[in-house]
Image: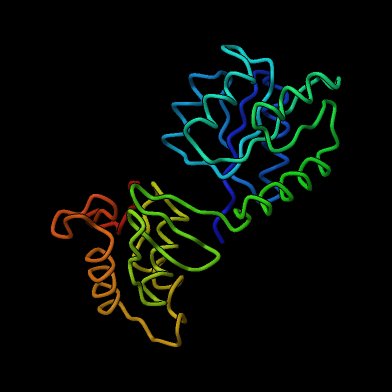
Length: 225
């Protein structure tokens, strides 16, 4: 199952370390940055489904970061801050924040609030991005520029396996273990080659020169998105 990706914008190393460890245990993937510019740069790379944003940052501030993010992205934001007074809360919400929680907070309460915001945003299952592809893991649909790419059940499962292990080399044996029982089909080493070829034909701009699913000679395959 694909993890919900969180961008944590926080400049306190202790909070970053402790909160990241807790959220990972709760099934979230956490990417952290300590300033506004780094956050904007990371948004283009990681495509998070939710942002946790501190008001006080090493560079910039949470309010201006929120405004910049909301101007370009439809990503829910929860403010994390020690400023719990009414003015700070109202300011954060007026800037477009989806929720606001004051420090110190109870981690499980934060997770509950996060999941509530994700449900309201319709992203609890998450839209996962791979290059110019969007994967709706709730509907099992893959699209490019709004156009659906019709994958078979086994092709879709194979694609999810690569997504879950982006940047890692997967041997043919590992791939076979992951997909052998999908759709009740028996997949052997030869048919795996066929399915990878079919998947590339559907998701690659140039299947003859794949940019997403690369062959690593003698070892297997790697998704480089």
